Length: 263
Image (cartoon, rainbow, N blue to C red):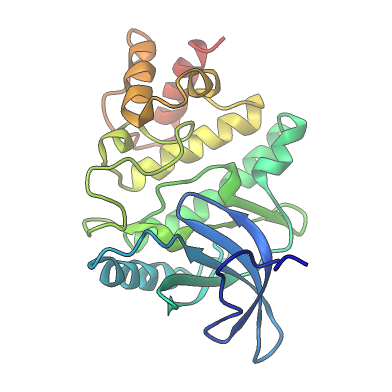
């Protein structure tokens, strides 16, 4: 019988028993775990083994510490973090629900529901901004829905603190093409980038499709810079981007302009 944890995954991480695979992403793999002290279910993210350059541990611990300070009821709380068998891990509260991305498989959401979800994500970002934390990857897959559309924003464990060094290579793109703000394509991000991504996510909830869904498919494989150049040229003359969106109304106007180029 195959190990449900997958190959080369430790059976125990800190005081958590690793049980089964939940999912995988660009920075790591997430497993269901159990706190051996009290039986509480947790989600354990093991970062990919290649993320082990000499300066990584210091940056990882600093950023994980900052993310662990977030205590909004709309944020997935970080319980522990560290290194085990050379692998960096983040243990988070486990949310038994579905992602917004899964909810959107059936099409757009009613306006009232979409606004209710977006408002809760905005409250999570409000606390993050107050603490100088930039998420950099707000998207439907990182919004968890549970208990009648109560919202928890996940993946703050690989966020960055404004003005600080980041886990990723300086100047490199980090995010998801369809939701990333234009400045992220040149390696820059602040709280306004998260506001833009929330606007793009709200657009998806209302329209049933991403702002640049067609372009993302057409230019898949050319890299972030190629996608940005194609996306930027398509927006010129229809309210093209002049700087990071500072308000939800600004970014939604830009989102509408962008969407006109995909129809």
